[in-house]
Length: 397
Image (cartoon, rainbow, N blue to C red; front, side):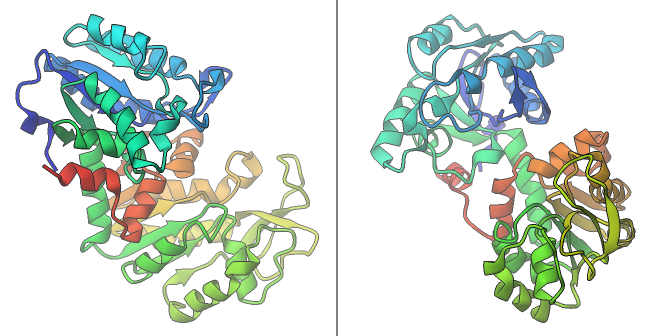
């Protein structure tokens, strides 16, 4: 993949950047600006080089039409606040490629940044029809001279602003994409050992391909979160009202038979009668969950056991919280894993999505970890061994 340096002198050039600015917003307030901050180094580099920087990004799922709930206006405001110390002005266009965008591009000065409105307001962005995507890509390409792909969280999508536009302009990978790929290669190509993978989140089905691929590579696979109850049920244990995927039981039994020496399950579980923060929480043995209770976190003994496994590792990849970390009584397991990752003598990777949100909500600084991925689904697909369209296209001339 070409880098920004390979694009030559960018002074005065219009550079279209695909960033990942898909942050949680409620009532116009950004809950976690981690992805915005992760996008800054590439934008600063381009602006300082004298480029006219045009950013395209998405927010949520507006289903191909303008929706005020998904406007990028609050993101533009936050981007402006974060770039102000660098002396960089941020503008915002009220549409994707229309009159507002075209006028704003014409008025853009060297060293300034323009954020276009949510690219998913245009139904062609996510179209399965190559010609439709190509038409939007043509309009985006007409705004710029070169393209920089820096939204790692979307490189697994064959979308107009990710894939098709790269085929229409001289292109390069931004610093964020290059950093993510470098870390993921360390997780898949001869990782330093011991190599521990921690998987959580709601569903086993979301992680099947990752488990398949990493069972052969990892030394230990620690399982927590809602997905653990399918593993416990597969062992023949009662799981009460806990989250359960009955249709995955045979697959999970296969994992337990094939890799019993690698898979580490919790020995205790925090349960409650209801999915509520004020529901009375108790700790029970993992093989003794009451029929009228549901598991909402791994227990304290399991947190210590997981931390001990992590402490001895040279490489750790973590994707998915251990429990319902948003509710204080059920955040202990996630906090124990996060704390253990900060103490790893080696590479510690927080795999984006809910895991990244969890460590920030629980008070951990980003630089406490080796790497916090912005990837989420893209990271998982890379670890599954899939080809990611948004990366593959960057390797084309």
